Amino acid sequence: LAITMAASLAPFFSPPVPAHLQQQNDQYAAIASQPRHSMVEIMNVTSRMRGVYSLDWTLQGDKMIIVTKDSQLRLWNADRNSEERSWSGEWMYAECDPNSPNRTAGVTWPGRFRLVDHRQAGFAADVDLKALSDKLEKMLFLCWRPDSSYVAVGTKSDAVQMLDLRKSELSLGNSMAASTEVNQMCWTVGGEAFLQAEGTSPGRIAVSRGVDLASGPMFSVVAHQSATVALCRDPTGRYVASGGADCFLNIWDARSLGCIWSCGPGTQPVTSCSFSSDGSLLAWGSGGPAGESQVSVFGVDTKQSYLQHQCGSAATMLRFHPTMPTLALAVADCSREGSFVQFLKLGS
Image (cartoon, rainbow, N blue to C red):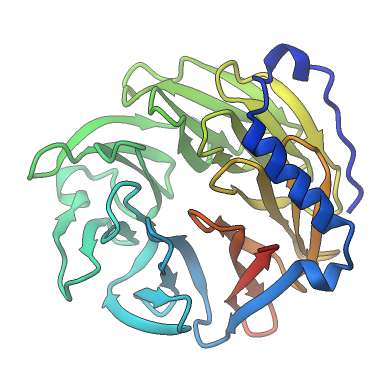
């Protein structure tokens, strides 16, 4: 994958690089000078979970939540490479609570929202959203607000709904019937703004104020020549990244949403992206019906490429470990119409 960088706006939008991040990037630069095989350790390759819809690390990083196409939500011990518990349902997506090591929110295709306590076999909450609003069915994804007070859910019909979790009983917050396809969502680190990746042409990032969807987006920016497919936020609050069907990955200042620099174009659309816990690394997956399918990792501040991992098929979802430079990825297995999970360890 050819990588080019355009950083002309960096002096105007980029905050100073903290010393510890620069030191971390120097270490990754030293790793990049070594042979590729010494940089990457494939810790586990699990072929039993054919068909992965979503994956996420728990808060402490000792386990993963994996949604599989056989209608299971699985609690997976990454160190032991074994399943600890599972919950049945027509799951489509799940994301771990950013403030609790034992709680996960998930949505099902028929329109149910569920909270799972990893220590229990049942559900901590099970709400039929379709009974509350006829727009809330055929659920596709969700996104926790960073303080865990709200969860935003998205549907196949591109409706976006805020769910208020501040009280013991869930209630509906504001909703928005999007005029275009919504592919992914994320919040700024303080929850002040809510971003949506739009599948327009050109592709846009729409920005709403906090949990207020009723007023519509405050503004939107053109992010890609074609659909904006992937969207993620730097955990330190400095940056947002977007990936598009135009095969570009763009880095944005999280405060101004000014584009700082770009990577690309590649040969295939960007399918997913993820920042490391300290914001020093950004990984993105690419792939499609034809051409190369790979995961690329580069330093956010050094703008140096550290890894290009050939997957064979599209990497449909990436998630960095919450404390270590370990990357979990779901890779489509086109030959078996499913997917499998890999864990890549970069450095020590």
